[in-house]
Image 1 (cartoon, rainbow, N blue to C red):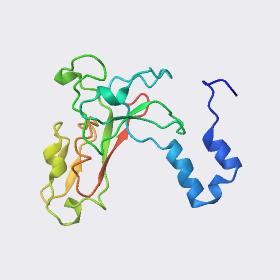
Image 2 (image 1 turned 45 degrees about the vertical axis):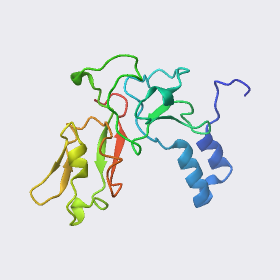
Image 3 (image 1 turned 120 degrees about the vertical axis):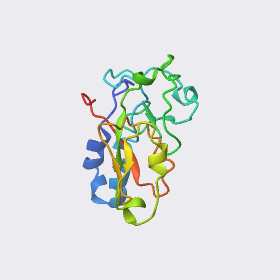
Image 4 (image 1 turned 90 degrees about the vertical axis):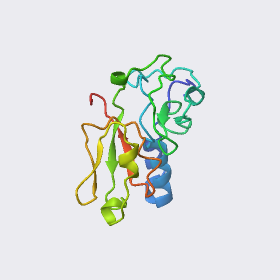
Length: 175
């Protein structure tokens, strides 16, 4: 077990020590396994290689974070859209990005129970921030997200006054 490449399975170990018996224990396990955001564009998730790159300093938006050491994805980068959205500047990939070269990173999920527009308040914050025009306001004011038009840039997340939007990362093979 001294090999730094081998990490114990925290979820299994937590189960064996009774972590799942208490709410606090379940929250601790959830915090170590929960996906916090999609990886940066052009980060190769499929190869289990995490380059020794200082991801936080590469992003002018300051949205690239790395998973903590006690997380199952320790050291891997993710995008924290609660700060800002991805501008696809290409600095994380060391290459310029053309408009059509923006990869799809995830999809915006709208919690209608929290969304102000779905609860009788005039709010178009997410609609205005969506450059992909994937978020639209309907005739009665309700907001909808076009799953196929959303590229998962996260521009809608931070400005939402009700925290009603999050970006779900794509799974392997999804485009």
